[in-house]
Image (cartoon, rainbow, N blue to C red; front, side, top):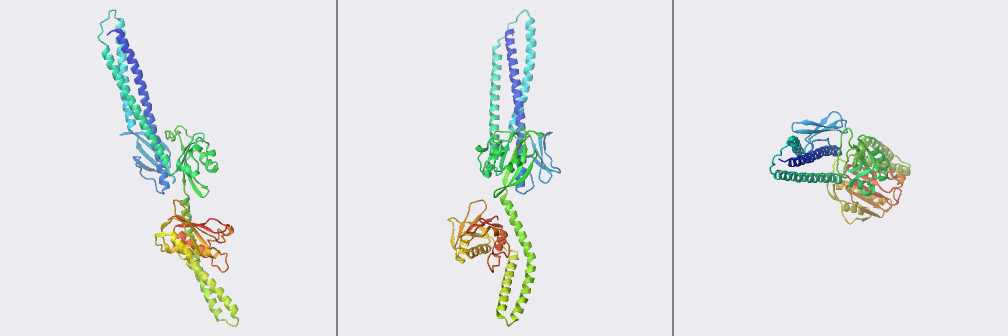
Length: 516
C-alpha cells in the first residue's frame, strides 16, 4: 500500500472516529432525556391518580400505568431508580391526605429508549473498532516511512469506496432514528396537551417567577378568562378578582390544599410544587410542565359547590329530624293540657262571649300543635318515579286560583309526586296569601336540575329572609307559620334545597335545586 493511500485511509478513519464518537454522545443524551421524560410523565400520572381518587371519595388503588401501587405507613415524597432483574425500575413515593403514602413502581422502558441503547452499543463498538484500526494504520504508516524502498500498492480505491458507502448507510440510519425520535416526542407532546385540555380539573402552571404558562380550558371556564389574556402574566394580574387564592398558590414550597368562595361557587385548590429539586425533574414538553425549577407550581382547581350544598342539605335534614324528636314529646303534652282546658271551658256558663274567645284560642293553639306534630314526623316513604314538574306546578297554581306561566320546554325527573305536590301547593298558597295573582315558572339550564318559581305578590322583607324557614314564624295574624318550614323539610327529604333569591324585593322568587 502506498504511503499516500495509507495516509488518506488514516485521515478517513480519524474523521469516522470523530463522527461516531459525536453520534454516540448524541444518543447518550437522547437516552438520558428519554429516561427523564419517562420519570416526569410517571410523576404526573401519580399525582393525577391520587387527586382523582380523592375527588371520587375512594382510597387510591391500582393503576394501569404503573406495575405496582403499594401503601406506605408514612407520607414520603421522593424518586429513585434502582436496578432490577429486567432492567431499571422507577420508584415514586407520594404522600396522601391521611398522613400515609403510596409507592408507585414502574419499569423504565420504552421503544425509543431501547432504540437509543441499542444504537449506543453499536456506536461504542464502532468507536472501539476504529480506535484499533487507527492504531494499526498509524503503526503501519510509521513502518512505511522508515522504508527507503516503496512497495507497489494494490488498488486502494475499491476498499475506500466501500467504506464510504457504509458510512453513508450509517448516516441514513441515523437520520431515520432522529425522525423516529421526533415523531415520538410529538406524540408525547400531543398526549400531554390532551390530558391538560380535556381534564375536568382547572390547571394553572406558574414558572419560577410566578408567571402563568398553563391555563387549561377548565380553568378558563372557572375564572372567565382566556389563555391569551393571562399567558406570561403574573398570577396576581391574571386573576385580579381572586387575590386571596393567588396569594395561597404563590405561598410556600410544599403541597397544600384549601377551599375558597368565588361568589356563589366554592373552589377546592391543590397546589403541587413542580420542578427539579431534590426529587429530580418532573415533566417536559412544550406548553407542559417544565423541569429544572424547584419553585414552579401547579395549581389544580375544582368546583365543589354542589358537594358542599349536598352536605348542607344532609345537615339540615339531620337537624330537622333531631328537632322533630325533641318537639314531638313537648307538643303531645301541650295538646293534652289544651284538651283539659277546652273541656273545663265548655263547662263554664254565664259569660258566653269570653267562653267563645277562650275556645277559639284553644282550638287555634291545638291546630298549631297538630301542624307541628305533622311537621315533626319524619318522611319515611319516598316513591320515586318520573314526574313532569311543569304539569305539577300548573296544577298547584290552579288549585289556589293563580295563573300559571310555564316555559316552552319541560323538566322531568325521578321524584315523589305526592311530596312535590305538598311543596308546590304550600308555595302557591303562600303566594296567594301575599296577594299574588300569577305564578311564573323557569327551568334554568345546568348540570343539576333546578326550577325557579316567581309570583307577583308583596314579596318577603330582607329582615325575614332567614326566619321564614323556621317553624311557627309568620307575618300574618293567626298564621301557623308551618307552610315554608314544611316545604324546607320535604325538600331536604327529597335531596333538594330551596332558596329565596330576592329578599326585600316585590314578588318572591324561590329556586329549588334537585341534587338527587
